[in-house]
Image 1 (cartoon, rainbow, N blue to C red):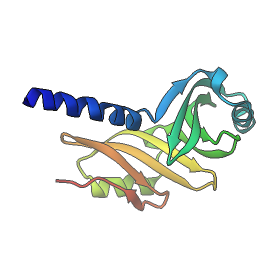
Image 2 (cartoon, rainbow, N blue to C red):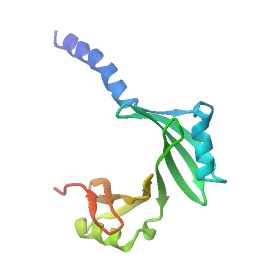
Image 3 (spheres, rainbow, N blue to C red):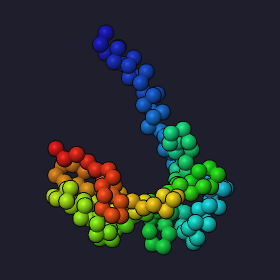
Image 4 (cartoon, rainbow, N blue to C red):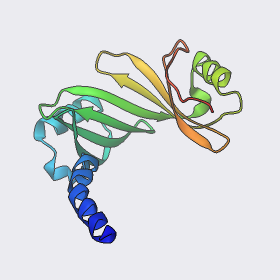
Length: 156
């Protein structure tokens, strides 16, 4: 009877888990609305568009466009109407502002910087997302340009 009950629970919860997990989906560029493609080309002239994803965040559809622009890998988010929301540009860890590096090193003195991105919102505000590994833990730390940690991970 236990096996049968586990099966019923698994079959019942699987569609829910799939629906929650499938919020982001790669799509062909032909499925990206024309307004989004026009906005991408206007914001990033000469960029090579390498892919696209359609996702739903808090009930709203967002298109994430993957591109290479001026030597950087960038993920830029737009509304279906072509409104720019934010972009994440991969940067070299050595190019992080000194205040950002110092803040992370102070919080995670044994941490190793694995990856860094500069995030620019539509209001032009900037934050830095840095993947840090210390020991067997690895996670993302978000820091403003002045070195204030906005999101960190608890050390245990």
